[in-house]
Structures are given as C-alpha cells and as structure tokens.
Image 1 (cartoon, rainbow, N blue to C red):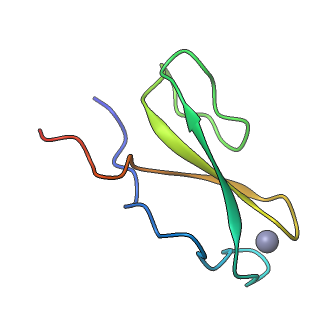
Image 2: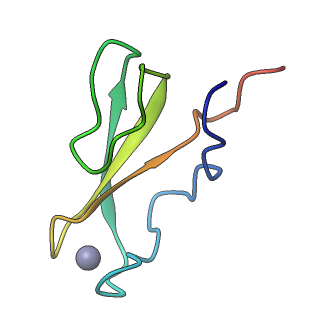
Length: 67
Ligand SMILES: [Zn+2]
C-alpha cells in the first residue's frame, strides 16, 4: 500500500518548517528514494524543496492518478 500523499499545493506552498512561501518541485520516480523521509518502496511523487530552508516534503502528482 502506498502512503497517501498530500495534494500538490501549487507554485508557492507554505513551508511547514519556516513558513516561507515558495518551493521547488522535482518529479521523483518510484525508483528514487525520498531524501526527506522514508517512504518505503518507491511511489511516484513530486518532491518539494523549500527555497529558504531546504526542507523537503512529498506531494502527490498533479493531477493525481485515478485510483
Ligand atoms: Zn522552509
């Protein structure tokens, strides 16, 4: 079972750690492990990286895949 990822939060999300608005977005394939937290065997995701503090978190693809 894949983790439920939060939905894509747009071009200028608020960083949960420093409240900065703005983060880079990078596609991660299932083969690439998360640098932020362990998600187990890979899932497709968008990795967000805060432009201020470099905190990273994962969000769902946009648009999300149909289940
Ligand atoms: Zn931040």
